[in-house]
Structures are given as C-alpha cells and as structure tokens.
Length: 376
Image 1 (tube, rainbow, N blue to C red):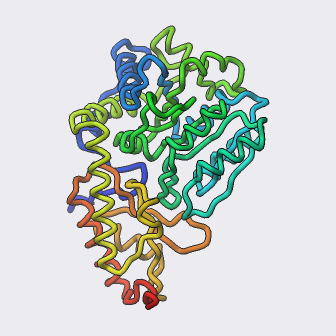
Image 2: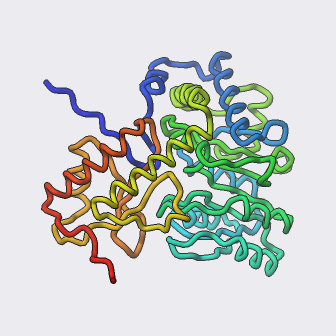
Image 3: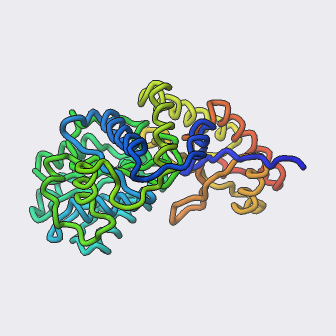
C-alpha cells in the first residue's frame, strides 16, 4: 500500500511543523511534574526574550486557540467599565470587536476597507475626541487580507494619550519585530501554532507587569482570568488547570529550533523571501495579489480568483491538495479570492513547488483566463 502524502500547509496556522517538533509530542508528561514545569518556565522566558520584555513584562500562557488568549486579555486587562477602540480593517479585527461586545465592554470602531492600513492619525483623532476610551485593541497583521498595520506608530499615539494598548500579534509574533523597549503596550497576544512553528493549542499574553498587578477582579471568567493564572504560576510554577502538555513540549522544541535558526531576523527573513517568491511566481501565472506591496505582510497573501467560468474554489482546492499543498479560502466579503500562506517549516523550495501545483491544478480544471485584461 502506498503511503499518503502529508501535505504542506500553506495557511496562517496551523502550519507545517518540523519532524523534531512533531517528535516532541510522542512523550507523555505529568502536568504537575517538576520537569514539565521547567519547560513552561523556559517558554515564558524565551517569549519575553523575543520582545525584549525581561524585567518589565510577564508571559502568561493560556490553554486553547489564540482567540482564547485574546478574550483572556480583554476580559482581564480592560476593567468592566472600560471602553475599547478597535480599528477594523478585516475579519480578525471584527472578531476582536465582537469579543468586546460579548464581554460587555463598551466598544467604538474605526472602520476601513480590507485593503486599507489602520491610520495612526485616525486613532489620534478618536482618542482626542473621546476621553472615555480607556484602551485601543489593534490587530498587528490582519490575515483576512494580509495587511500589516503600523503597530509602533499607533503605540506612540496611544501612549501619548495615556491609554492602554492591547495587540493581537497572533500572525506576526516571532517574525516581525515587536520591541517592548521601544514600542509601549499593555499586552501582546500570540500563539503556539503560528510563526514560532509549533502545533496549535496554546496561546500566551505578554503583559506589562505594572498593568497586570492592577487587574485582580476584572475578569468575569474563571478559566480566562490571566491575573489568576499569573499569580498561581508565580507561586507554584504550575498551570491552574490541566495544560496541553504535548503542545507545550512541542512548542519548547520549536523554540529551540527558532533560536538555532537565528531568531526573529532569520525567521522573518525566510518568510519575506517566501512571500516575494510566491507573489512573483503567481504573477507569472497571471494571478494578481490583492494588496499593494507596501501593505503586504510576509505571512499570507490574498490572490484574486481566476475569472474563467471553469474556476471553482472547492475543485481548485482539491486539485492543489492532490499535488501536496493545502491552501486557504479567501476571507474578503466583496471579492472572490483565495489565500496562500508564506509561513511554516517547509524550506524555501516549498513555494516554487506550490506555484507549480497551482499551475497544474488550473490546467487540469481547464482554466484559461486567469485575470481580466489590464486597461491600457
């Protein structure tokens, strides 16, 4: 019997992990065991190292997908009487806004199109106009379309107004620089299954210690109370409730490889080369990327779907999958698109292979017209 091909995941997470990372999940751990608690402690310190947050910030891990940690950050760091401003240029910004509504936090949004970057000047005006706003919640890399938002510039504006900044850095953390010494923030939120190239199942919040110390009683959730999780970990080195032990061990191994590769400059550089090769390769097939180059983060690229009537995404997806690659559907509301991720442990040969698979898939479907003719 022939062995099925393990496809390469060209997605913004879960993503393709290394064999070493997968192998780390083969051992069972006792969640209260001292050896396991050392792994948790090591991850917390290494995460702080990535943002240069030692001495000023705390890394609080949380079970679940990244969204669990986003909700934990909002419910813990924003008082129940707080007012959150969410600049909204995509699906994950909209999710952040929905979290605020569900949690009963007062919400204001600044709405953009999915091809626009958040404007620091707009945030400045909103904060100046409404002193009741206590926090700004910003998505760093909005992977709905792939836009990179200007975190540092927004952070400077928020700090100047004396408000708190909560950053969803789910898809950027570990590949795009966030330096706590230069960029002021109350919290940065990320997860195991993104640019650190671990498996999904664990998030973490990097919170300013002086802010976290003031958050007792804010959360009206037991499981998502970051303050309680932090205090318990400081006292015992243990998680409050059963941790995802295999995921924690695998993330530890993935972070060892991250350091071996050269840390953030090397990881971010690899993804940037992947992104460039992807856009150029797809352009050679006639496929146009959705975003202008200046807005594009090197994480995931949105492409306009072929205009040929023979094109249909589900069939296209299956044809590409047969050739060993998993794509993502489009996330835009108005246009038909598909998305291709640039992140994961597949080496730099993976992107040319993916482009070739797309070309073969379109040919197999009988797709001849890929894009509208450009206007003269």
